[in-house]
Image 1 (cartoon, helix red, strand yellow):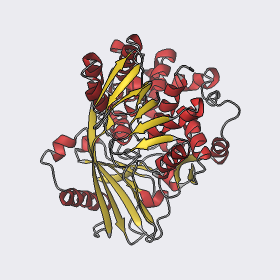
Image 2 (cartoon, rainbow, N blue to C red):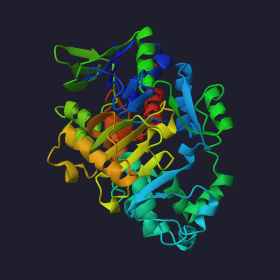
Image 3 (cartoon, rainbow, N blue to C red):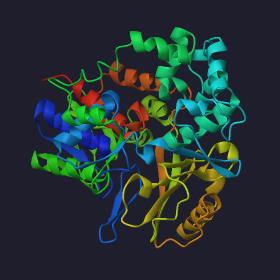
Length: 475
């Protein structure tokens, strides 16, 4: 019997990759859709010199998770497009707040003066953190908004932290768990009595970052060494990020890891010998199941045998996001240069943010933008199920309002991504622990990896897959 991987997104493909590396045994990946890659989707217009990303477009190289992805990219021999910390896309981050585009400070000097949309110098927020006593969080967790407001004040929570959470998981900072998404800051506050104190003392006492490459058997990946030496802030891939799942699939196929598309698993039942997968035309015995499915999809296929596990999985909510790509035949459309801008929820707009793709990477004379809308507020703005044309018109209207671009785009794409991002609501860390405890207590031949359990970024889900494979016993 073989191992089955459910889901052909980046986490499932990575699970197949690490299964092959660790055990050298055949495995099979089952993907319900007609393509691999999940929400990573690149539309390349080579003849026009630009591309659209329907999902993420850059990866950060930092820390253990970043080094792990760079090792994977290196082994797959993919071509990288690095963005250094000095690049305008790394330096300039913006907000649209109080009716204007506001450039966030990118140096210590920016903390001294008063910069819109803030009404007082940002150093005062740091003083507030130094003066504020530690509050023991109820049940060991609290919302990121509550944490930020308590440590740094309401303006920081509204205009710095809340829009950042929109950019990370399209979520509401009033609901997202600080214990899960910003655990290191929370731990520093609890341990040292404040965030700044924790950051200062941990530089001398915490060795985690220095030991971040401990997962590697011999030496750190050469791309990681290069990224540190050249001070990369982030990087993309030649031909777009979809090159990563495509390369993984090609590599797996060469090494007898089969990827079956249009193959939805309808049910999983477990027994002493392994598990049975119920597919459309067959019931397949397998030794072990690795699920990279969204939590709600996994819940549906284990519910018949394990309703309690299904209920725990369904406690993880998801949000819908609209992504609109716009291309203009003019590279002088933007008045501002940077990675893009975020829109704080207090502005009460349907837009989460706008990414300036053509500032990040050369688009051969084009201006390319990606508008993100909806998220936690999707039903509020789009409950009437607008058409693609209506969504495109809405995106263009806000591009005109925010960026003063009134020209019709030459090319555009509209993607509505249903239930695409899990929400790490308060208590999420314990929620995931309880799910994994249930699997362990019942000795189910099941491993879970992916965004719902270990973090939303590409680095997180790849490392999630690696760690779950490393936990499997050698037989």
